Length: 278
View 1 (cartoon, rainbow, N blue to C red):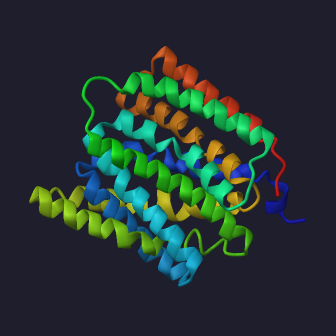
View 2: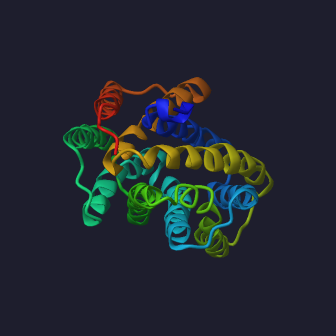
């Protein structure tokens, strides 16, 4: 038995989530989150092409789903605010479960409980983020990021179980450029500015490798052996870690309700960790 088979599959997903949790810190320092998304795709693609070149349904479809996520989330953060954007992004477990149901996969009992706890956590977080007027375009982009992320989770699991594990991770990344490049060009034309560009380019190297190439491979390794609903809930440890980085780097202190929401997310992760792998 190799070392990989001895590890709980959710460990790979948690490791991926830990790396993803640093994206918010980088976005704060990038000065241009729209161009950051493009450079993230670009540098990740350059690395991925040396590792895996794929041209099949699995890589293209999952790559486009990731591209929508890379492009939509920064726009949501800019137009709707970081808090609301994060709230909308973490509707992903709901969309992952829905997509999985459409594809004929029924979530397990623990997966349902975990998703239910995440829904409660989302309501608590949403109650604190939705204040005053809300930009409807930002809300739409936030929901789109959640839908794309949840869709990727469900689709990646389906294709990974068919033996396309690498195709839905490294093989999919180059196809994110289809979406992020067009989004960056359109946004820059509309706003009549490409600047600043140097800082997001430098941070894009970090995002491309540390928060894209490595974690999406780890995620694919884990998602092939757990249910889509389970994987999506485990991945929600990301905002918990992101809150820690926010405190350490920016002295952002979560409220009592936010702490309760994070506790629910952690409970959900523990519950689904006992889900039987497939």
